[in-house]
Amino acid sequence: MARGRGRAFVSSGKMRLLPLIAATYFMVSGGPYGLEDIIGKAGYGRALLLLALVPLVWSLPTSLMVGELASALPEEGGYYCWVRRALGGFWGFQEAWLSLAASVFDMAIYPVIFVLYLGRIEPAWTAGSRGTLWALAVVILCAAWNLYGAKAVGEGSVGLFCLLLSPFVVLTAVGLWKGFLSHRGLDVIGGVPADSADFAGAVSVTLWNYMGWDNASTVAQEVVEPQRNYPRAMLLSAGLVALTYVLPLAAVAVAGVPAEQFSTGAWADAAREVVGPWLALCVVLGGTINGFGMFNALMMSYTRVPYALAEEGILPKVFTKRTQAGVPWVSVVLCSVAWALALRMSFERLISIDLVLYGAALVLEFVALVVLRMKEPELVRPFKVPGGLWGAVGVGVGPTLLIAFALLAARGERVAGLPALGFAATVAAAGPVVYLGARSAMRMRSKTT
Image (cartoon, rainbow, N blue to C red; front, side, top):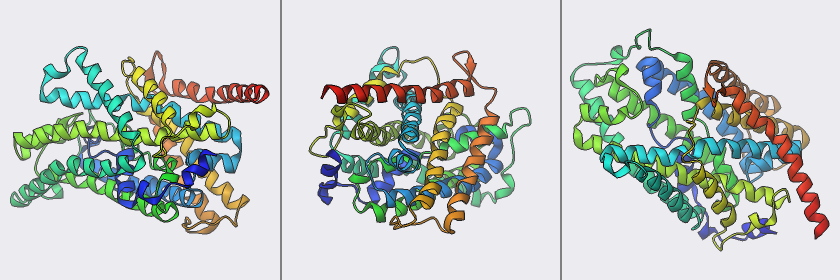
């Protein structure tokens, strides 16, 4: 079987701990880009509070869950395999469906982010159809990069991580120094005018900026010592993401940049004000790396899910074809085509849609954690969520409550003329129908072979 060939890969062709951390960082974060709306909606004080507390009730529990399941069941397909083993084939398929459906709404935006930041350097470069061509180039280049294997993506993510964050290291250092010289302290960190405050919206954006910890699990067979490295990567990445969010935000706050000036793309303006035009250009270049790096790492993650479905016979066996580097190349090519076709879709990515689809999948993973504790107590778990069975139950409470809050807060958003939550729920509800169709097709294939 293809899974057996995956286990046969030599360790020199697999990701080690540092590349796994870097790839996970891009799957979750991609740097401080995206925090602007939190500051604009909540002000510095509340934004800092959210960015410090949300990891404790969202990132840490999710990282612990992923650490246990990925180390106990280091299979290609990750979260799909966990849910299938715990709850059966139907729910395993729903987990895969929710994740892949979310990718349609999520992945198309990252090449667009690349184009938006490129256009800030020279608008003529992205004018008219040129923007679409640049976005398509990102898809093609990332697909080619992914075909070299998970190791290549992980090691590339290390380099992209350093390039991405270097401008923010300078911005943080200069901002904190200017705040120190001017004797500004945390007393300058206030709120935003009442007519522009949107704390519920800020919570949703914060959750979106901290979600995606399970994505790295799908390449488990392409990681060196996954039982040991996944728990370490999850916990280290969680701390790294929080640190690279909180420090730059605190620096621009004490440097005196007004919170009400923050909206999408405002990091470049803050860099210009605090340091100078040259750093603003570096931050803009970092924005292109943000879009490219996130798309590249997430492509590696999502394309392993169709491969895992094909191994179970739910998708045609052609999806199990791998390159010598262990890459499911058919899945990479077809997923790339699907995401490329979505580049010019008129809908904008709504956080509420992501949270419905991703949130439902995440809840299934927490359920799988508890069910496997009860069904398979003897399963070897190199890393375990502490606290026994009740500890496994408890880690899912915080994330579930936050998802419920975010969905309630987003009930007024609309897409395609429908309530955004209703639109996402319709997509999720199509999962059982697609599953029945896939099972029927599988039975027909078995009869003809």
